[in-house]
Length: 438
Image (tube, rainbow, N blue to C red; front, side):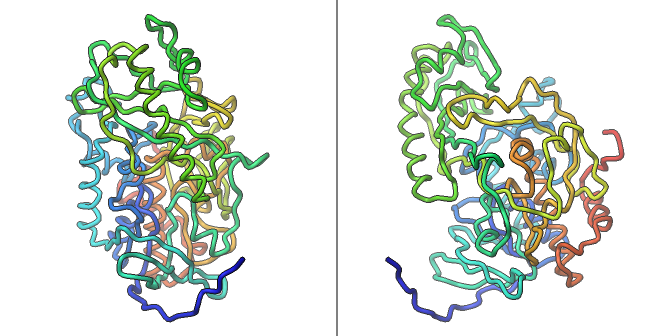
């Protein structure tokens, strides 16, 4: 059965230089960066806060060893431990996310840049003419409206508008389309930090009185949960838990997201029971809060003018047409048929080095008027498992926002950006030169 929606006129509420879709780390960074370059910029975010997985998703920390760019600025402004002397040599302390603090810091940065933003708003349809994306249709409490823009940045993670506009993509793993599982982060209070353990990687094997903790998790937690990942916070007795797990979920399908949310929430009490019974320091812990946004790790990989691969990262390639520098993480492939690390992944076993991401990965191969930022850029499944993390995504957003402002000012398409000029602006704004040893 089909329903024919009646044609109607809708108001053009905004006509801007740059519209950014998605207010996660990539999108916020893109909007701030475009506005700082003088572009009239509008950010569209479906949640009631900005920050995405970093805030509404209740992520524990900024992962990896990425350096420079707007990521470093966000880190300095939002960290509960900004003073290196207070860290006592523990760089993790500085990377801990206090979601409530970060929400405000990101909004303040948007305000300072003079970027405009709409919360509680979803972009529903692309406005495409002659192979060029010229804006989007949005829906919010004010109704259905059109937003026209010289450049659109899709930093929404899944790239729904880019896909609906006709940009080419594949989903998940190249061989079979399988996508990494989803998780719902949560925090527990009442933890005895003096006795508690904090396994932070799947490969962390810690002996506790009842046995090895990851083995115990697989034995006693409800499938497909089974791994034990517990992270310190900056709050007394509070620990962030990354232990819920739902496999075989397509994050672009609303019904599957609803199912995944139920599966993950039904795992919360069994996980608490497990912590009470087996894990030292967690005997009296209690559920404090859970994320408002489920963590989707992988969906669409768009086809760009360039594609970054696993080998590029392993070889630490310094592309001459770089847009992101000093990216660093591991191959964080979660098991797509159960809990823990996939056989193709490597966390502690991989010794990361700094790599770059070429500008062409942010530019769709065929569609004009569009830039990509975040986990939806052009890369292989394995490369994506490395670059998908928030510090790298934030610096992608800085590159995309800066390039979009250049396009708006010069009246050119993203594919025609002079990358040397883009790099010069990025270097002036905190991005580290890959040719210099930092």
